[in-house]
Length: 367
Image (cartoon, rainbow, N blue to C red; front, side, top):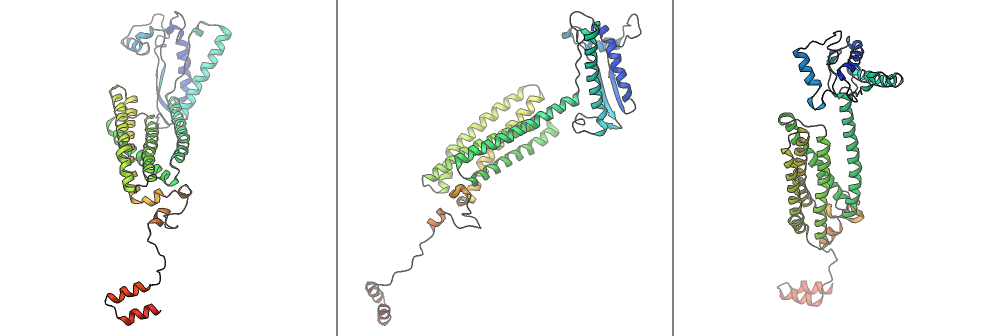
């Protein structure tokens, strides 16, 4: 990129030749293509006009830049007989070492040239160089994804602290964990064939849909379990309490999920795969969170109602487990086992009148 009204083609010719010389040491290991418009006229007093020159001028000098900015491209196709791909630098593949070395060489050339220009003040100093490497851009994206997943992990821990403060039952936290895992697994299972056969999915879509499924599963589980616990506190049996929770909180969850999924689906109208892949993944994540919360949670509560409603010691006891005693609710439902009282004289008279032998009745009374 030039500063002022200088001719970029003339100023960048030396730079293009220098960069081409840096590529020579990789000829024995790599197969690559070097694209540069700037040195096409090297050695000519008057640059010949050719169709190739016209094409490359349009390629490297878009009209909106007015000839003040251009590109020098290197396409690394293979090294050591292995095809180069964008993840190879991040994965530290040995055959991809020349790609990383080339980026470092060009960066060192840029710094060295900037330092020399400051000391000499040559006209070429008006050209600003920027080195962009696709593998390093992809590496930065991967690091950003890992950083986002780390933030999601920290946020999950804080969310479970809030859940415990609201539910006060560790067993119900295990139920929320099952909802999260099922929602994420179902979302990824649906997105895989879409990514393989329908549309390209950007690398930022998976962590985004995981975060959405995580957040919605926690939120919706809190709605449903909180209302269920409130109804149980009022003395309703577990099946009645669950029915009320599904009728009230379940309706709220369904409407909320449908609204949010619809909002994500409207983003599919944008003509870019970066947005559409993330929007579709997020919509599927919301739908799966709603389905799992409204199916897995009620089913599990009905399958083991006493286990998930036993809150003694915040659910950390062995009550209602194969290793512990029945909980308080189960004990209240057991029949009384008090010793029978001794029969009275009235009981003996009733027994005699019912057709029992008098001797048997008298014998019981004397005993």
